[in-house]
Amino acid sequence: MTVLVVAEHDNTLLKASTLNTVKAAAEISFFGNGEVHVLVIGHKSESVAKAAADTQGVSKVIHADGDSLAHGLGLEVHEAPSFYNYEGNQAVLQEGMVFTVEPGLYYPERGFGVRVEDVVYCDEAGVFHSMSTFPKDLVLPMRG
Image (tube, rainbow, N blue to C red):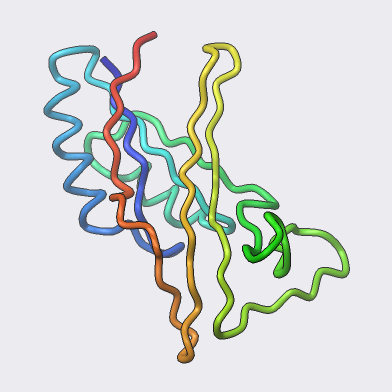
């Protein structure tokens, strides 16, 4: 059985909880094919993907770095700020803004996919707070 771990990180470093999850996943996968795959989601998160690849027990890293992984949230489903990477986009996050962060991983050849969707709030000090309480470290058994 291959185990997929969704990495929690700050776009620079893997969180300790992800490293602990990888270690546990390696022990679980021992009963199958022994493979642990790590999914790193985030724009400009190459250093995190490299750190995941260098982590003991990881056999594969899937790096999802897209031009649009989020959007503003308000009265309309999609509103400012826009996080699309296009010429002329000058969106700036400001205090009080609420937006989504919703990267996805899809396997059309297998007929399924997953999207991790969070709602985030930017407070008066410019600190971001996830309004989602669901843990980001998921261990999903995958069958070939």
